[in-house]
Image 1: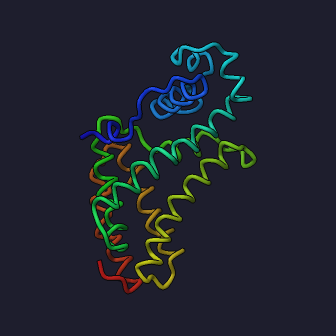
Image 2: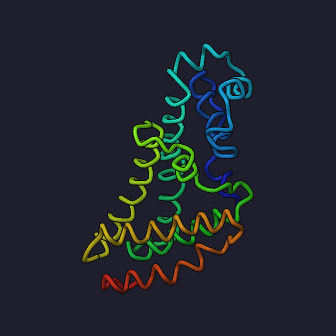
Length: 199
């Protein structure tokens, strides 16, 4: 089953949800900067006033999309996927790499919306950048909690190191190295061993 099919929800009916879901799909495929408001409302089948009734600006919409991504992708797919693949906390950390490997080989893989948004939004004061960072922090917190449950000596450091491997594999996969996550998995195991965690 394709990763995208696992994450899909029925097409919503409300104006706000139609705009949000449409923007989400477009931003994932093309990035934030390449997609304008006119295209979003056209593909959502709503008036521009509907968009601005629910979102004050394109940045406001982008923030909502990034928060939605956390619900749909991080919690709706990634967390569920590692729980399906493993039961022990340490094994679930390694299962992250298995899940990413599946993602990289899916037809809908276009890189990471969060990392792409960070690259496109360089202004430190941007709410879009803050939302991207917050969503990445949620993923790191998931890893930290697993590390803590597994008995890591320094769960924060472990979470940073594991997430760095995952983010690096995301970039490598965009560059055509779709086996990057699988190749990083043994390195993740070494990081667990360094924390005296058996997996």
